[in-house]
Length: 465
Image (cartoon, rainbow, N blue to C red; front, side, top):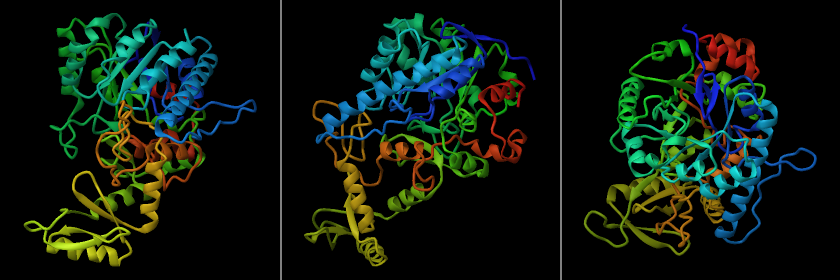
């Protein structure tokens, strides 16, 4: 294994090792501070981070307002307070070593306001901001105005070209790196485009070479690329080091930091990671963001999968093949199905999935009454955690709605991520994970359930393992 040479990230000389940001309290100040103290880059999630009371206990993010718009403002206040709290904690733990980043999701609710609030409230403590989930054109303007470096997360050279041409060329001085996140292997939300097949992963090397060529066209020869998603053993990436086609390179680790002593996730979550098998991570499109995402297959994802299978197209009146009336809802108003679909729907109803719920795509799904009630309640409790939500039809624009019917095929992502981050049941919540998480069970480093400190993990990564 070649020796890892230091690299300049966000104006600081660090190991080319970056902690991946994991939202809703999973990449926090304690883990980020430990990575920075180890001479690497620590990442605080700016997505609904935790604040603490005078006793050091987590303050539950409970919403009291009656309207979605008012709850959206509550959410922003929680996120700013939590973000500042965690950045200050990371700064204290790092002792001035390494580098502290804040990770935000552009399509999360109120991201511009949250980002400005954190940077204002923790001035001088944040060295860089990573941002993905969408096309964050404006992030460069916001972040550079504070003298902080920005690190866009993209999944193709084409995406970076669009960002550069439209906005980033104006703020080239503060472009800290370009994070290439493998859309097939990364955990959380993935940047698969409409022209890419989720079932056919592509080798990241030619995509990185294409990205570097694009960056050189813009004069960004020395700007690092960060490889994110699918990175486990650095020895497997040794040919990327000192490679002129790749250029300056760093590596992001999002999954491995979950199993450290500083990680805030529960002991049950860490134990589950040690038990994962290859194929247990499920690339799906159930997220209310509309993006693909990768998570551990469990009861939640299985139910969503079955909910989406119990779906047929309908018409509001009899026309063509849609000739068979099926009474639905409390008033028994009919929808019209094909003869074959009516037989299928009646079988679902007989099996207990008796509640029909319409989708924005002129289809109807069938769920149990208790699930239908849960969906309706969750939609009504929406607090605007996304800029646009297909599950609740919330939009943070002036209208407050996407203009589409709320989609019962999805779920409240804020509810489930808050629950699992604070000790909720693993089987019934969204458990984001990279596709290499099954390696916890086979990597000898974790033999007999060993949980390293972040310092021990960084040393292990540097060794090539």
